[in-house]
Length: 88
Image (tube, rainbow, N blue to C red):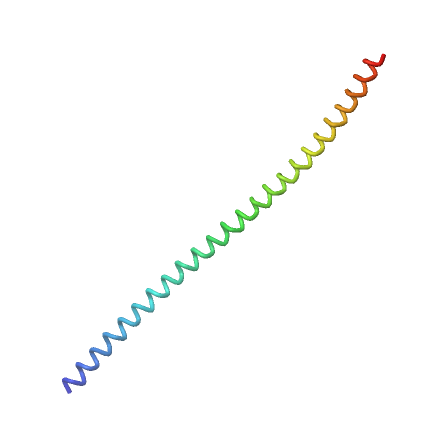
């Protein structure tokens, strides 16, 4: 009888430890899930910013090409005026 009670006590202790480990596992899982959600939100935010920077870069490149074309046009006009002035 004492042996049965002893055995039951050990079993109860193991069950309590298992329950505690389960609770800890659940708490860790919740913490990790929150961290995952935070990282996902951060990733989405960074992706939006990267897209905005990429769009700005494309705009600046187009503007640079436009400025380059305008300067080339002005240089051509200056060259024409300079040739006409020296010929003239």
